[in-house]
Length: 104
Image 1: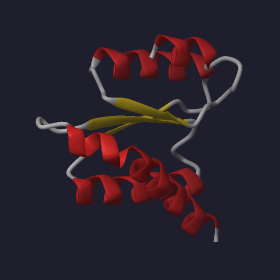
Image 2: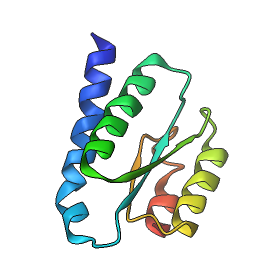
Image 3: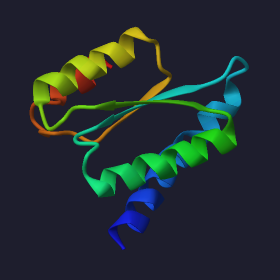
Image 4: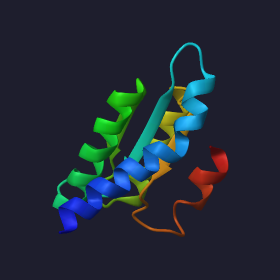
């Protein structure tokens, strides 16, 4: 049940950005920052997001914070430096992620 919910949430996250993807002529890239990719729920979320991104012709870059707020901040900085068009974040710590969200 949780895996289906995770997959559904991944699909919803990508589809919410789909209108932006249709505006780009050179492709669209979405960064996804996950708190812990070893969690089956988040694995399902990423699978659903990837399937939807593939169907829409969107590039998906997934990063794993491994439940470390410092790693998450560095990952988000890397996504910003790569020039992604949007970032979806599953935060490890909702307070610690605020500066990264502000930077994006």
